[in-house]
Image 1 (cartoon, rainbow, N blue to C red):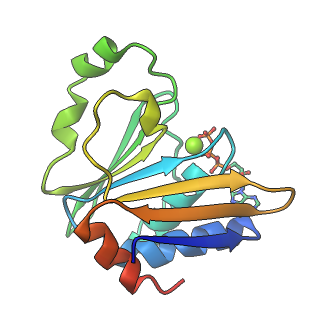
Image 2: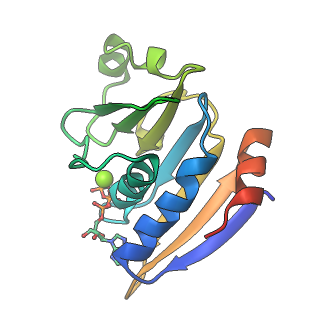
Length: 152
Ligand SMILES: Nc1ncnc2c1ncn2[C@@H]1O[C@H](COP(=O)(O)OP(=O)(O)OP(=O)(O)O)[C@@H](O)[C@H]1O
Ligand SMILES: [Mg+2]
């Protein structure tokens, strides 16, 4: 499957989608989280982290750029590139090294960063009068296999 959409009526539904995605993630995957301010990107990331077994507070990386997490089977790096307007500043942080075969990278505002690796999955979220419309697009074979197994 290459593309699928969901309507998420409440925050709990966003968390549930994240929890359903968590067991499908494998080291090396890149997931782009797209959508306006407040669309629900960090909430979805929180659901993924809960699904991986992380029970602590999930901080938005808006100011730190990156929140790193370590699990037994993978590293997870949660990026938020919203505040990065200068690509040179971004390069100086060495952020590319985080995109490697051992890690899963979740990226909010990928459109603000130059030349990111291809996303296996791109998740577009849009606020509706109530709830969120969410489209998940696979851009790689790994991403397509992931969508085939998604149970939410
Ligand atoms: N399906 C949903 N229905 C209604 N509200 C939701 C839903 N999912 C998330 N929210 C709410 O949307 C608000 C913003 O969510 P969140 O911080 O995840 O957005 P964001 O896309 O990460 O924003 P930013 O671009 O500022 O980082 C939160 O209050 C969250 O509870
Ligand atoms: Mg956010």
